[in-house]
Image 1 (cartoon, rainbow, N blue to C red):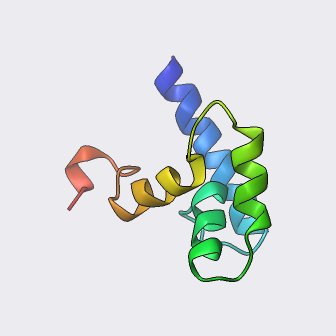
Image 2: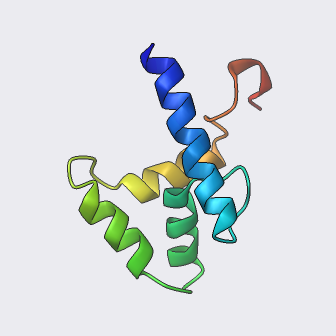
Length: 78
């Protein structure tokens, strides 16, 4: 049940990101860290990491997970 709920939450997160102008298959957190790396703005990742204080470096780790394609099913990973 947890795996199903996690997938639904990720899909919702990606939908919100797309509605805000991000890539469709990117989470808000990964997008926020990408904006930080591109020196566009820092406040989104700072806000998310503050809200998710219990998950150290959440945005950076979300971005790295996207780069490593960890969100894909195992059969589709590099």
